[in-house]
Length: 366
Image (cartoon, rainbow, N blue to C red; front, side, top):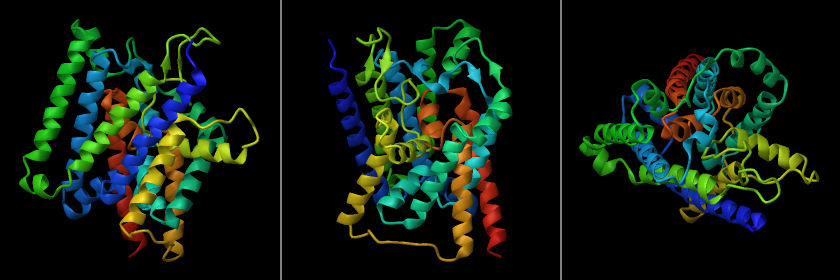
């Protein structure tokens, strides 16, 4: 009989190890989803966008290989649900993108900065977590369910592109998964590595780290933490999963879960989950990296306008991240690594949101 308690501990330990390394590496570099977009708009620099592209290419190819070898099932995620909430993804993506532009980064970047002593990031994360709670189960949750979530398309297949094309073309889904993921990876790698400057100065090792972290999270949650038949319920179960399904990195809802856990600690039904450990590991990894490099220092707000921007940004990310079913790591890397249709409309929403956020910042500081 499977020792579920011990196996869950292995899942959480493995998750912490991966996220610790991820946080350590991100603190040593400038890997940032918001920075990748803003660099293109502001400085016409594609270096960080190419970092992100290489990470995505690795994540897409690795996830497809895991699926092809039956090590995970990409259809056991919230991202590939046949219910395609297109308006929620677009709306949430724009809100999240706007929020991360005026809050100096997405959830992952703020976790990294928190580990380095940035108190602005602490405020952003707390506000983001509160508004994420309100959008999951609170007042904004009621509004979300009764508005944008009511506009959807019910697909006849799972919403990953290989499944959709397989139904249309009659080609085996696994074949399409390998072919499409390989094509995506080749295009992304070519886009990045054809640039000599990127090859020499792009710190692309962090892209490799991020890409393999996404793959690692999928394997831990979908393979190591998967029990085909729970001895207690006789049902399949993914251990330490908040969604009840296979998970990878997504960093908005976990902050809400941490607030819930810490404020209701005496409630024994509240336990630490896979997603929560990812957030914790990133902070601890960044903390250790910043201490070893001598970069740790407390940082605060420069003025009232700076505070207001970060409060509004945190709120927008909390609402947007839940509405879109993921942040730049959730939809941008994890969901897109499964070739989920939702990610291909959410990511443009992020980009548009960042553009609007940058325009707002220009005007607010004029």
